[in-house]
Image (cartoon, rainbow, N blue to C red; front, side):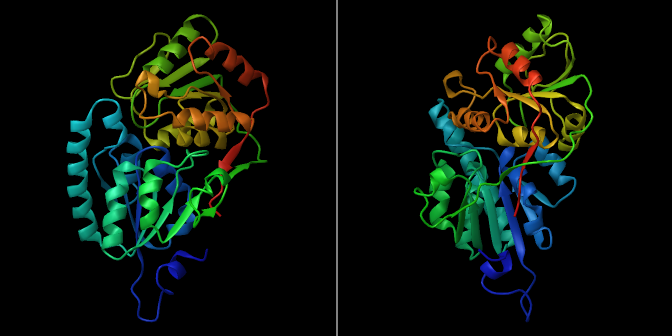
Length: 332
């Protein structure tokens, strides 16, 4: 596919200015994947566009970062169309302000809705656009991918099943197993709902398993703002990305929602993983793509899954009885 410079209208140098990159990804796994791609962008003049989450704030402490309001088409599906339209208008104004001020030469985006206007405005301003369909989409394209693919000069998908949906796309499966030594672990379980919304069903299931004696280990639970606070656990609403990484080094087992960022971060540190996907039917997410993610990781033998509180203790025992697997995504 060539380097970013080669794909951005010719080589750098010979009187050309240094390329400026817009790295656009909404909160959670989308922006984490851009961080995994650091070798591709670190040598350029770059800035991030993301949402104001704990991860976004951690990012802003190390890189030049702009925040845009959250909005998603799924808000309309769960009965909040006015909220979606209002948030989208605010996002459009903010995105236009950022892009007119920054004038990037290249836009690299992993989605999703919150950064769509940056991709669109970047293209209208003459930037080269690289769109990477979410790693969360194994079987079906995302709405962001369908809308952004006509704007893209280069498109990457991360599942062969999507190749037919994006005929121009490059196909790369970035998931690889690691052969390194697993870090020494403590008798610690870490439960996390990720960077966006609470998942009280999962948090309460962890608390019930702890109370019933299924989890004798110490449990740290990151609940999200306003989330449930189960007894017998160490509760914190939000954690910075650095704090989460420090916990993962010591945690033997992680119980998390079905976000790719949480799954990959845990597997990278050799944690045993049990995932409980957010479900649209329970108003925990805008669609069921997390169930798709969890099924794909389970089929590869990387994690255990539990879709209900009743299934969680058995999933924990299965995870504890098996040899831990280390995996990551490779940027090459």
